[in-house]
Image (cartoon, rainbow, N blue to C red; front, side):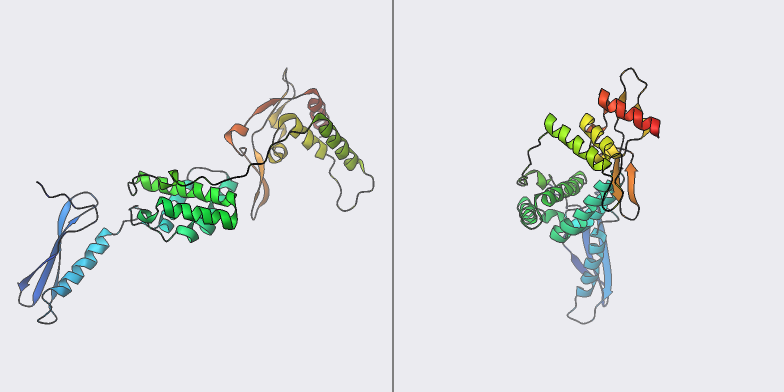
Length: 297
């Protein structure tokens, strides 16, 4: 029966022999990352009669360990999750994600995932260890942070699985993070009417306290009531997104307003999700408001 091959990046039994008086050689078979097994050797002069090649073997082991180290961004079972996180982040940044998504994922990676489990190697990232980490994160920082930490970890270990460093992604088998979802309730017609009346009165107040009150807040609320758009999406609308001359006038959500640290508020040229990119037919009430606003601008 043929001898089984060495694992990639490992070596076999080390042998020693004296190749010249006082000079010893240590040799071993090493299986390189291209799958080829090669002989590696190191030589050293003996320091005493009792040495018998021990110094040569030490030099060989050091050389073999250096040879077994991953080159560049190679991912192996012994890669630590801190290093895996760096490699994954470079790949993630190439995916053209939304600015707020990048910011939040980076915060979770640096503040929770790496401090919590970054010292583990990929082979040590077992279901039980990751499950314990996520439960502790839920208890200390809340379910939302734990759920996002699970998302980041799953993406990282998915990358490790694609590189053959792990057989399967262990995040598939950890317990679900319990999230208490709030019931979504739409305003009744009476509540919507009361909201619009209150806003109109607030805008028309002739003696406001503090900063000058905006005169277009009711328009923003009307867009949200008519379309169901998020407030950031409503604030990001531009006249090029509105077609008042069509047989059935439309409004198209194409972006959202976000805050960028160091820059302030800016328009992101796509909404929060793909499903948010919608075209809505404008009801008559909203059509009159848009026409009036366009005329006054």
